[in-house]
Every structure is written in structure tokens, then in C-alpha cells.
Image 1 (spheres, one colour):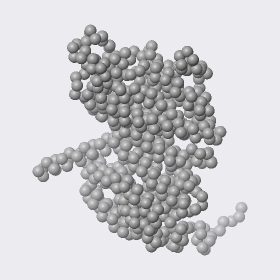
Image 2 (spheres, one colour; image 1 turned 90 degrees about the horizontal axis):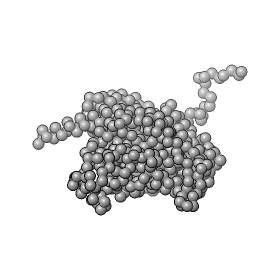
Image 3 (spheres, chains in turn purple, orange; image 1 turned 90 degrees about the vertical axis):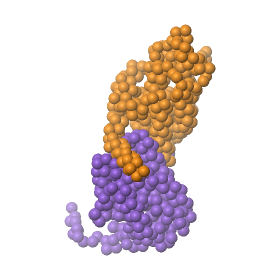
Image 4 (tube, chains in turn orange, blue; image 1 turned 60 degrees about the vertical axis):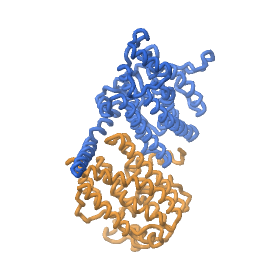
Length: 276
Length: 328
């Protein structure tokens, strides 16, 4: 058996193994990456929300959850369809959804968090919607008309998602002691996953620079204002912690994503090349 | 669909009826609709509550076997279609609970009866969905059988039920086409896909035939329900119609209906076919089907696990109503 090199020695001084986030990507690559971030986030959140089908606390919520999941999957078809077109490698939206492994996914860590109780699902939805809505609004003004068109369509759906999730967070936060306690616990759990969508990296900066996507620092201001207002009405305390997890946008995920993909991709993997 | 063995009260002849009952029966015979505020015999009201309630329960329990495959749907489009379908089913449940509420029973009361086992849902949802082809078979056969039952119910005597059926039928026929389309893709696909499609037909054929309820000779409650136009056709009539419609569809797919006794009968202008194993049907109704425990357990858990949400929403509404009142 050969001896292993010193663990602390850098194997490759160029850093190729790590996928450096600091170098500015080429414009087409940056657009592909940015579209994956949008499409993968709606796909994984749609998957999570769809896990509720038939199990909601009240029939109206079964309908609302299925409807939200359906909107998100529809948006995924559009974002990943455009990503595939931009990539120009002959892949389809389905190829991107079903035939990539976890490290190639670019979704936010927030959306792969497990459903937990209804409160956790709802809080995750609200924290995401509060980003998604201003993000789509910004994207409607994109210099890329294909992006603007998808954003306009998705924006109409997401305005409703945000109305619903904000309203329910307020009602349950300011409901019974138990509903308040559960909503606060959900908020505390999910809070460290909210930094990623509000903090630009090189890809985000390149997209903002090109006028394709909005500047995340502006989105962050809107997000904080909206979230602060809703949490106050919900009588929930904004968590103190400032530590934020990151990595989803660059392809370093939590353990949960692998299981989501194992389930989601099962048929495509078990019957390669079959049409459905 | 979805209504099996609904108990109704004993049948009376026109001579035995009170003047009110007689006038009521004559309205039905003239084809008039009965509306919520109209006088109605207690038996009519109770039978309708049982039937509409059972139908509503079937819709919401029916979310589960299909919900089982949403996260594993093989393409984004199939996933979207399946989600839309399950959402429709929840919507059907909602219309039907609302129709039942017009008869003076609340949704919560009906759910309590479902959860405690006092009310049933269709036997079909106690069968598992084991492969993707089951999403095709459920749409094609189960929704197909449901439509067979529900199309005549659009003309049922109770106005709110009839109107709910009209809306539901439109969506169900869309579901059936989607299911058949899944089967078509599989039947024209790889060898493995064809096997998957045949296997689904094998497992869902007889349970689908059971959806119409026991044979007419064992169906004790039909006569009164038919006089009231709550039930429009006998179980055997609908089952025959379903077989006659479905066999050519299976042939078109190149699949084999799992019945060696199946043959065309020129004289009656329909197929002769083997009856389902009714002892299996009664076992499923009693709670011994492959998924009875999981299905009902999932619903009970959803209800109990969601109590804090419903309580929270009610508490919020009360606080704010009180605050509003105080401000006035």
C-alpha cells in the first residue's frame, strides 16, 4: 500500500478540487449557474412541499400546499428549461432535474431543510417567499428578455404565496401559546439558513453587473423590512444569532439533498433512457 | 363513485306515505330538484349524508395512494400533472363536504365519523400503489369507474349534490385521460415498462370492479335510493358498462385483462366476465385490506397533528374579533 501524502499539504495549488467561489465566472457560465440557483431552489422546495399531499392539518391547506408545490414545479420547468438552453449542451430541463448528482445542484440550503411540523414548513415558505417575491420583481426588469418573461409569470404566483405564508405566520405566531412556541422554534431553527440568499457571491455580482439579475444587497434590504414587519405582527422575536450557513449556491449541500434526489430521480436512474 | 353499500331506510309505496312524503316523491318523479330548505323525509336526508360523506371521505383518502408517487414522478411534467390531480381531489372533497353541510351536518362531525371508523370511504383506496404504472391504472380504471358512477349522478334529485357532481365530472374525465396516457406511454415503451403496465392492470382490475359495490342480488339498499334518485343505476348495470368500455381500451394498449372468463356475448351486446372475489371485498370493507390501517392512520395523524394549527387560527381570529369590537 502506498503511503498517503501529508493531509495538510495542498494537492493542487490551483485549487481546482475546491471550485473557488472568488474568481469571476465567464458570463454564459454565470448565467447558467444563476438559472440553476433559481430552478433548483424551486424544484427542491416544490418537492418538499409536495411531501405534504394528503397530510395537511385542514383540507384548505391540502389544497394550498398542493397548489404552491404545483406553481414551484411549473417555475422549475421554465428556469431549468432556460438553463438548458443557455448551456447549449443538448440537455433538457428534465435531464437537469433528474440526472445530476447533489454537488451539481445549486439550490439554497433553506429549501432542502426537512418539513418538520406544519409550522416549520410554513416558516420555511415565508422566509423563502419574502426573498422570492422581491427577487422576481427585480428579475422582471432583467436585461435578458427570457429571464424577464419567466419572472413576470412566476411573480404573479409568488405574490399569492407570500400573502398566504405571511398571513399564516402572523396568525399562528399570535395564536395560542403552543402555536406561538412552535412558530418561534421554527424561526430559530431556520434563521441560520437565510443568509445565503441575501449575500452575493461572484456569480451574483456578475449577474447584477450585467443587469440580468437584481443586486442581492437591495433584495436583502426589502427582505429584512418585510420579515421584520411580519415577525412583529406575529409577536415573534427575530433571532439574535448572526452565524449563517452557506454552500448550497456553490453545490455544497446538507445531507438531506442526497435523499431527496434518491427519491426524486429513482425512475430515471432505474430505467435509463425510458420515456414516460 | 366512491359510494358503496350506503344504507337507506325501508321502501314505502305511495299508498303508505304521509301526504308530505307523497308530495315529495311526486316532485322527484317529476324530475324536480330538492333544495336544502325544502321539506324532505328524514331517511332521504340521512341516506344522502351517508352517501355524500362517504364520497367526500373517498376524495380525501384518495389523495394518499397518488400522493405516494408525487415525489417520485419520472418527469417534471408528470409531477405537475399528478400534483394538479391530487389538488383537484382535495377540491372535490371540499365541494362534497359543503354539499353535505347543506343537510345539517358539519365537516368536523363527518371527519370524526371517518376517523372513528363509523363512516367508510371507497374500498379501492385500501390497495397500495406499488409502481409508477399504478398512477396510470388509477387514472384509467379507478377514475374511469368513478366517472361511470358519477355521470348519472349529475341528474340526482338533490340540487347541491347534483351541482357538485357536474363540476367534479369535468375534472375526473381529464384525470382519466391523463391516466390512460401514462398507460399508453408505458405500453409502447421498453419491455420493463410494458411489464409494469400489465402488472398494474392485473392488480387494479378486480378492485376496480368492486368499486360499484356488491352484486344487485346482494345489494339490499338500492330500491329506496333509486326511488329517491340518489342512486341512478344498479351496481351490476354500471359494472357491465364499465367492463364493456374498458376491455377495448385494454386491447388498444396491447394489455391483457386478467380474466380467463372474459368473452363477448353477442346476445346481450356486452362482455361476460368473472365477478370479483366478494369475500375479498368484504374483508377490505371490514378493515383487512392491504392499506386500511395506513390510510386511516395517515388521516387521523394529519388531523390530530394539525390540531394546534386549527386551534391557533381560531385563537387568532377570536383575539382580533375581540380587539375590533373593543375599538368600535
